[in-house]
Amino acid sequence: MPRIPRLKKGEYCTYHVIQRGNERKNIFLDDRDKQRFLDTLASIKDRFNCKFYAYCLMNNHVHLVVDTNGSDISQIMKSLNVSYVMYFNRKYERCGHLFQDRFKSEVIDNDQYLLEVTRYIHLNPVQANMVKDAAHYPWSSYAVYTGGEDQLQNLVDTSLVLKYFSDHYAKACRKYIEYVQRGTEAENDGEQRPAILDFPDAEDEAIREPASNLGPMSLIEAIADEYSLQVSDLTSKRTPHTAARNDAIKQIKRRCNLGLRDIGTLFGGLSESAVSKILKG
Image (cartoon, rainbow, N blue to C red; front, side, top):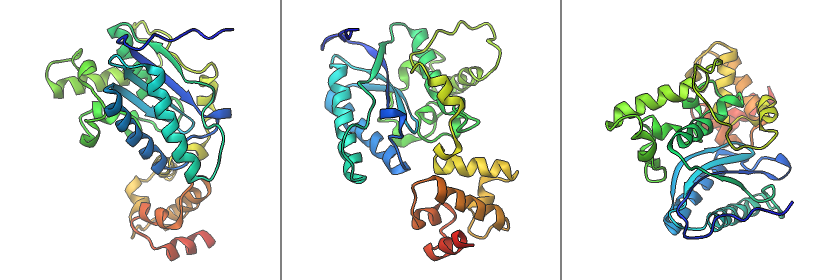
């Protein structure tokens, strides 16, 4: 089937864009990779004078809501992907394709759909069983919409979405949180929710999202839940819950791409030798 040409440069459009790793492999192997991707987004924003209304970085795919501001969406994504792939291949001493085919996109042509798409994106980690609450996932723009993450305010433009809830910022944030939380309810509660662009097998992929694909902090959160503890009970250097803490350290080492120093930092500043001793125990 021939490709449908995208809208031409100069047409002002807002897009929902999704991009997945080749063969559904992870495109982020640690948190530094995710941060590098966000740094690249910021550079792209300045270069093309575009706007990002929402994003979510999953382990093997990303969701973006992009207002092109008259630029060509294909050029925006090409620049983003080329820059990140060069970084990724250099860091991991690899070559070849990182992303699967070309990105998928659809035009967001009405206000209600814009709200639905941002909610869908922010709930991605919840649907993938990575966190129980969207607010607990650090690699989406949800924190900006809830009044936090001031350092991301220059990357994400929340004004267009939040103005539909209230002209007062704090009230708009509160109402948006309520709106997102309604999206997790089992019953439709009367809302007409359109189908959102995603990969055909996204639902199956979310269901089988393994614990090994969790980021370090999300994995610590999951382990804390298993032991009926708080995250701080595991990450305190002088925790009395050493058995649970040591189990968490071993799982982090086995499932995440972190060195001894980084693991020690997660757990209250443990030394590399202390982490090594725990791993050998």
